[in-house]
Image (cartoon, rainbow, N blue to C red):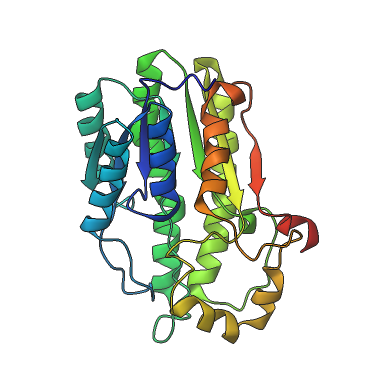
Length: 275
């Protein structure tokens, strides 16, 4: 049904959350995985970030599905590290078919970083420059394979409709990056169509991952009531599951979505229809 058996996917932010769920579901459909994650803490991020052990757990879940995973610690902000990871994975598996530019952070920090330039920079560098670095590193391998391919960029519901700013470096950087990658998606979808490479962006609402299910995020929401109001979904769900997003990824990268490109797919429980 999906036409994915024997294909290879490169996933950023693979250690946990949405990236882990995508890796596990694609593996169940017959896909081998090249997965990277920073596996380190940024000072501007208040919640605990991923670890090398987390990335190892993702690899174990992939292997449980009968597939292989090349799991590497790499920072999407560093173009050389991303290129090296792609080269390593392609050398191991001999091909690349799917790219999930998924890595993200919420640098919506408490003091001293709450309104800092560094929080803005970390957000842009991870979620906009990091996506560009991922595209630059992977597109040549997709084209060289002459088999077509699929790229999915993780944006957000916040990348489709504006939220009220409170001039926070991290939050502003998040919004700017999530809007910015839509422009990248559109540009790459147009340019890669001749190679039968499809490019789409994914726009979830709040997802139950360690990025938001932690001790910090509820305190941040309490301190920003306008933002809390803007996060209310149309459907009766406060947040969605990682599998809800992964099912959308599966559609976009499989034969089921073979003529879908240049699209902004929402998995947002109707958030963008009511706010």
